[in-house]
Length: 172
Image 1 (cartoon, rainbow, N blue to C red):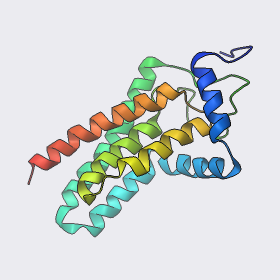
Image 2: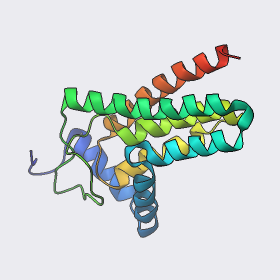
Image 3: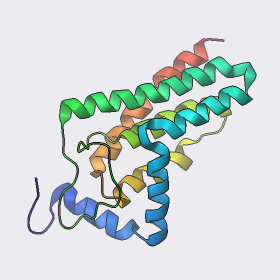
Image 4: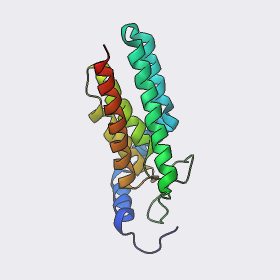
């Protein structure tokens, strides 16, 4: 539904964020991240690469990779229940195509956060600060999600990733 007039609420926050964050370089980077994160394929591929390189923990990498895909699937299920449409206001410029018209939660935020949490446990490095904020910001730069979409996606990905990571730690 197209909102008319001055933006209010989350549309106003999104429009301000997009205006502040958007530059030629940030849009290019955001589009690259969008393609990498589409359907969690980039994160899944990195997990499979981890399994190929780290033979001692191959099973853990494969479980973590499946967890990233599972987090993505959970976000799709929530999207289909909530059915929140993507931003559609003249103050917000949509700068990338999307596979659906549904917005809540952000599947990119979900799978990225799940990957960051799970792969942090396997690499021994906290990847969350380096991976999650840029992906969340990219969804706002591209105008395809409201702020609560990306926050909810990150929360869902953190929950799924945390539960699976805890299970991996219990299994020697």
